[in-house]
Image (tube, rainbow, N blue to C red; front, side):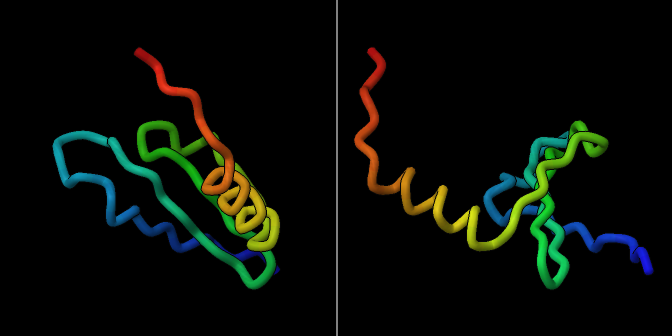
Length: 66
């Protein structure tokens, strides 16, 4: 059975004019992410994979851009 996803805006969206935010929807096994200005394009992942990516990004040193 296919259910419609309940999309939620990020609290970091800024609340400005237009569609400038990240939206998230979750099912028991999958996370769905999209930008509000392009809702047809969607990134789908699992909570474990996303957590692994976030831990890696937090741990990795990033070069500064001048």
